[in-house]
Length: 579
Image: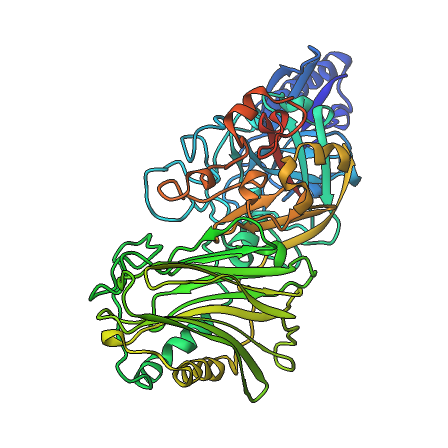
């Protein structure tokens, strides 16, 4: 098969009428001169070269010079049914440029705008990772911005051997996006027949999201750190902190660690702790996750956000949305090694209920006091509103583990019964010289929390954008086999997702061929950000696709491992088209 790419049609003008009245010789001379002039004009107006495809067939590529007029703005404007390389000049682009046009699949007219390629799966934000960051040593939690800026890079002829982005990514207005998966190193002329997955969006996702991929990422799904939905509530509570602490006679302002990665209070001042206040959480009796201070954690599959704040009093809050009912129970664990070292006393306030307006709080308290050190009063509570939040309250709040001394304690408190739209939290109260915090004082603090929550509505501020899609080469079953085995239950095929956040709020740019509610989207989605110094696995165009290194090396190339994508997909390039 001959693969021909032509940008314009050229016709030799008919000069016959000019030769009337001339003899045969004169006519032949004029005709010959006209032919030579037309040929020279054609040579001057185009650049030609001949390639061969993988089958050894010739490929003629004809490209107009930069001063050609009436160039199409996109492949959609080209009235030709032959797929290949064409020259276009979108409105907004300064110079014309070559790109690949798909003229047969899905009614044709598709403009190739970009490719995402991984040249070193074990390199994290190393040279070649142009969609994330090639500067892994920089500490800023940002990418290179190439998803949202006007940079161009790469070479069209090497589109499956390097990252590629042309001006059409910014300047071609479209309605839908088409994606192909092609093995690395495939020649330009063989892209279509060698693609093992092809699919496209079907709901005009670009129309209401900037009309181009560059504007979609710049204006609608920017790749920045997630801002938690609990932040407004924490800010509102913090605004009342002076009033709250002043209502507790003898309040002690414990001291927080200066570390940016704090996960406990080392001393707190005046030997309040010998290391304590280590907060962890878990869902459905699984493994505990220890919380960093002043950070958010997200469990999107359960509609959960967990956030801590080094304010006064210390606060750890979980929003439990649980819209799909998959969360049966949620536990908060606090480990403490008290400075009291066995002296003094401890007491418990059993579950108590406070009702204020439309809000209800239930709480449980463990109190260490009567030692020379500052007292430690751990308050566990849940809060909800049937009318404002449409809460479904827990059927039970219980202690799974509870302290038995003033030396140390591991307290685990659980809410169960598939609660929905509630806040479950923990707060730390303290008084000087081991003074006891009373039940009335706990009620005072929690009443302030209710007042702060009165106008609060939870909302994930950085939600994902999904588009409906249809696969026409490959199948959902085959695509499912390329997804890490541990993540398949979090994946929904028939969709494409633009921006996916992981459990600590870091984004990935594109989930190609599916949407996901995974807390580890970096295992299967494209385009991380520069997190090299903090979370290396999140950094890179293919981020954590390799999963466990030993699994990756020994795995079947067509089947994904437990935590990594299939080897064939790792060695493939994703092509992006728009129309």
